Length: 346
Image (cartoon, helix red, strand yellow):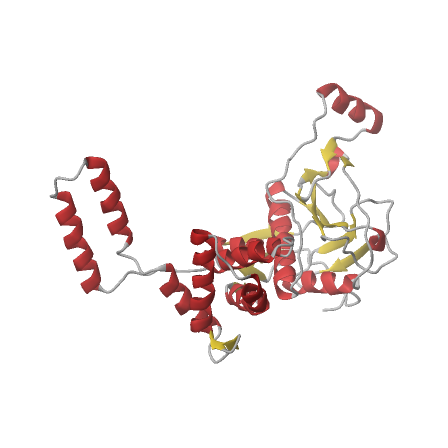
């Protein structure tokens, strides 16, 4: 859906998926009533990236109804002159509805980053408040009638009755693409696409953070970690499990020191499950069935990159030229794996 396409805002109740584990029943506020809760999801493009627009704000509708606004984080700065942005929504009848809508926006932004191979800084776990004294906050309240709120990266939900005064830092950049590229993607996925499980959300976050890293070995490790977050490690064959159990019993009956015995038993218990390498090859084969990555099958490609990962982490050895030659194919495999873990209700 392009930004120009318009949709009527539903006034009735509608089912809106915001997480893979639950469906939230949300009521979009009637425009004739007072808006109660609102949110911005603030994010940044790294390395002075921005969008080519002379507007300060662009309103757009999502496919599932709610109207959102894409804007420069600084209300006095046009979009093309900053790399700090926000997508905001308002008119929600409860804080829970606003939080659910904000989370759907955040997930849509992560999907945009994964699908279009770009980096976004969504500021997760950033500082939630500015270091102002109660006296300063009270003075702002008296002077403006509004509450002082930190204009931070990430999500902020507030009561619109508070007339918030946001205070933050603006950064500038240069234009790189049209805003409709972002707003169209968010509009299409908002409320309809969600990550199938928390680990898929973690994988997407690791993936997009990887684009903020300049050194190839560090980015390589983040990409491999993103794949690892998606792995479902299954049990080994029963014959193997029985053998491991016999070793555990022998260890329990040994005369080894208790600490050494406990350590060995802990290690043996972990052998009941298949290795990360085996689980990774299985996932890669499922994701890249019929495809090649660096002239290798998906399964063999994962085996190769996991061997390189082990050498880098455990031995401190890596060939920068080899890793550099594999990084884009690894990036593609990770994006395809994350895409496979996105639920779509189109």
